[in-house]
Each structure stands twice: as C-alpha cells, then as structure tokens.
Image (cartoon, rainbow, N blue to C red):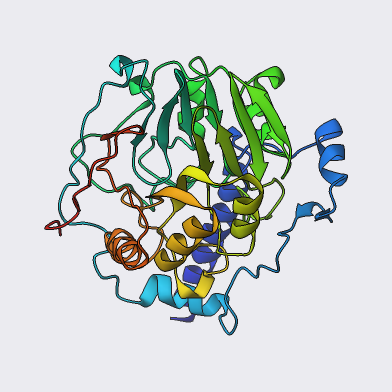
Length: 370
C-alpha cells in the first residue's frame, strides 16, 4: 500500500511538472503579445503615473472592493451557484450586410460584448473586435453564448479606424487581429499596446498610441484619448500597457468608454469635452467585489449624465459569462435605471442597425429568453 501511494504521488508530481512546463511554453506563444521596449518604453516611462514597469489609475483603484479577498472571489466564481449566467436559449441576432450600408448614413452596429461598428461621415470604424468563441487564452473556458448568427472578420468592410481600448483578451483578440490585418487602415490605442500589434505583423506607421489627454486628427476625425479607471495585461503582470477611453468627433461627438469603474473622471471628461451625442459605456461583467474597475448598471446611467450624453448605448454584455450575474441582468437593470433618471437609452439587438439621425424606441429584445 505504501509503495502504491508513493507511486501515485510520483505520477502526480510528474503531471504537475509537465503542466507547469507546458504552461510556460504556451505563454511564449505570439498570442500573448510583447513587452514594450526602446522608444515606446521610454515614452511610457516619461508619464507621471508609470513606475516600476506599470501604469496606475489617477484615482485610487484597488482591484477588489474593501473587505474582499481573492479567496472570496475564487469561492464566488467556482462554488457559488450560477443563476442563468449563460442563456439556455439561442440569442437572436440580425444578420446585417455591412458591405451594403448606405454610405451617407451615420450609424452603429453592435456585435455583442464590447465589439461594435460605427459609420460616421462616410468613415468606417471598428471598436474592440472579438470574433472568437472564447474570451481567454485557454480555449476551454469563457465560451461565447450560442447565437443565431456569429459575426466574423469576413463580414467586416474595409476599416478606416480601429480602436483598441485596452489589451485584455475580451477586447484584444489575437485570432481576430491576425485575420483583420489586410482590412484595417489605421489603429488607435493606448501607450504600449502597439508592441502586441507589431509582434503580430502590423506596421508601426499604421498604429497611433495615445496617452490620456493626447489627440490626433485622422481620416477627417478628431480623436482624443481620455481616462478610464481599469487595468490591463495579457499574462500575470498587470498594467504594462495603458487602458483608455476615447472621444471621437466628426459631425457627431461620441464617447467610446472601454472598461471602467465609476469615478470622478466621467464628470471631468464631460466638462472638458462634452456634451456628447452618444456615450457607449460598459454595462456587464460586474460584481460588488470588483466594482472599482467595472461599473454597476446604475452607475452606467450616472456616468452618461456626468458625460452630458444625449443618448446612452450600453455594451459589455450578451456574449461572454465573465461574471456570475444573470446574462440579461445588465440590460434589465440599466433600462430600469435609465427610465428612473430620464436618460435616453439605446438597446439594439445584436446586428441591428442604429441610425444616429433617427432614433426609434427600442424594444427589450431579451424579454422572454431563458
């Protein structure tokens, strides 16, 4: 019996060692991107909120809420019963031919989670495209919900400007970007993110990296990088690149929010750059345990008011189960909060075209789905 036990322990140890070695080898894959070096790193090091190899938020932003431990998060994620965080039904999707949209229309199309398409003043803009089945580097977890249609790179027209708000896997997807390479004219993102893109074969002159407050004129648009309250990282080390929101101004002014906890920066952005015609804000994958880095739905409505936005468009839901809330809860709660606060809310179905010059009343498409 003793020999058997020793043999089992030896086998277990070998398996653990092999898993560790395999994991370390896998993490050298190109999909993890690259660390900033040279002039890029020097530019990052010149910023006041960059030290010891990492950026920091301007407002104190602990990863976990006060009184919460990583043990609490672990237990909540793996041992707390998940109630409808993945829909039983196939989500309805409108299949829109993006190649045949009216060129003279300003419009918006959502692909689920934080991926969306904008056509503004004839220019085609794509934000945080993730057209993969998974939102993690390990293709066995965080699988996309079943849907009636899945948008892919081939559905995208030629893109004038592609925005990357930060380098998390559910916003910067390696497989998607490899396939998009020949469709994109220019990429706008935060400091440091360009290192990933260059490793994946994108030329440096095709990438503009901005720090908060910096701007660029591109394709007839004025683009400004603005603050977010979040974090970054594609492996174990956090905050090696900058996370951002963006102001996009053409004939209409849009706020592209990315991921962010609620904070004073929304009011500051609203005062400096607002009012906005549309604010596209994250609404989903939240939890009180990490509310400093992801807004609760009621805070999303408050943020849109701070930004002085005429219309609020919520994203970051209806595709991946990255939190334990019910899959439709973000849309239910943000709708209720918007009604109570008198905020104009736009909640299109995935794939539905929103014409910015003529906003109808949107029905709650999620109702009746399990």
